[in-house]
Amino acid sequence: MFLMNDRGGPKVFTDGIIEVKNLSSGYGRLQILHDVTFAIPSGKVTVIMGVSGCGKSTLLRHLIGLKNTPPGHVFVDGSDMALFGPQEWMTYRKRIGVLFQGGALFSSLSVRDNLAVPLRVHTRLAETTIRIIADIKLHQVGLTEFGDFMPSQLSGGMRKRAGLARAMVMDPEILFVDEPSSGLDPITAAGLDELLVDLKDAMGMTLVVVTHELESAFRIADQVVVLDAGRVLAAGSPEAVRSSPDPRVRQFLERRADERTVDQERYEKRLTGVGVKRRA
Amino acid sequence: MSGVLTFLDRVGRWGLNHVRGTGRSGIFLYDALRGVFRPPRKFHAVIRHVYFIGTKSFFVIGFTAAFTGMVLGLQGYYSLSKFGSEGALGAAVALSLIRELGPVLSALMVTGRAGSAICAEIGIMRIEEQIDALECMAIDPHAYLVSPRFVASLIALPLLTAFFDGVGIIGGYLVGVSLLGVNPGAYLDGMEKSVEWVDVSMGIVKSFLFAVLFIWICTYKGFYAGVDEGRFGPEDVSRATTDAVVLSSVAILVSDYVATSLLL
Image (cartoon, rainbow over all chains, first blue to last red; front, top):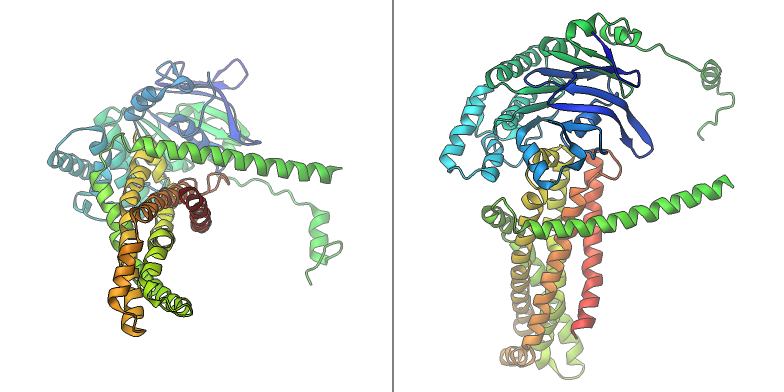
């Protein structure tokens, strides 16, 4: 169920389309990721989950190339991402689609024009063809009637679906999705989850979903990676993670809050004002 | 001791941040200029930005130019009349506008009206991950966002400067000739005889220089809004916009002095 890597951390998926090996990362002096190792298998849904601030988004930024990765830690089809030149980056980014948390739609363009941007830049298709492709993608996400709308006229869920349509417009091989359910009501969130799985099945994509929503994660996942404080806490099939005996994983799955640690002496001082400077 | 070390640490960080920022802004300019010749096609984007920077600034430029010319007419008449040289009013107004005030005031007004909006728009794209989205779509954000605005400002600002000069000269004429009674022939003749190509070319060179400066600073500040702080909130966009307008204005005034001293 759980394999251990040579440093004692969990290791899963012996090979994958993307492999992360002992990745440590941070911002300035603040270290966010510690020795993260896992792989993303082709054609499956991999869910990276964990509490807020555990390093999910930082990890995602490494995987999509928005954060520099040191050599020897992230491999795409066996090639070290850190050694990518401009041409390799271009090729990789044409293989991926990214749905950002807020949709990241271009606010000055209509929904249809948002979808048309990558087609206009990367292809020599006629405008009528681009329009047809954009409308097909909008139909797939249930936004057939909203092509002429501006992003500001859409609800949060619709914006995410429009962002999903744009992420898929170049038929990517790997789709990265950042927090698909956050900020959505349960019905809309469930609808978006179903849509993701349907699209994955229909188009044979590899899906990487970053989320902290348990329900959503277990509904769509083929493989789950649980991060905690920048470390991989558990990884494996949803069933394997669900039955993990690790107390921190259990706490996360059972939605138990951290125990509060209160400095009693400081708390009393604050209440009584002793030793505390008062504002004039 | 620790206080001294903390002070040195802060000074060192401040210095390093500025060196890094200077280098990054140079690379940004290089990327923006290189992006002019790289895909995607920019014709429609350039037209759209010329409309935004140029056409939409016509009213504010015309208004500023008219009153600048009128004030020059008043002040010029007051000064020249002391020497009995009211006839030189046309030359004084035209030379002041073409060589100095036209390029400088046009650039300052365009910075306030269009530069701030451009900075805020790009800054919002930064904090809403729209620039990240462009990168993930294998689209060069410099070529897509910045380069068309560079080209548009290089087209729009010299034209606005010419418009400013024309309206300012008419404003000076209205005050000098219609209000204060200067001979119209003397006004126009003095202007025609005193303004030479070297004066016009100085104005043109300055307007191109100011166009590069204001668009470079405004797009750069928006592009990196909140990046150094590592947080991406609305306050970072507002700070970037304020910084962009202040820095652009200072850069325009300083470079005006440098350019004038070199071109004279």
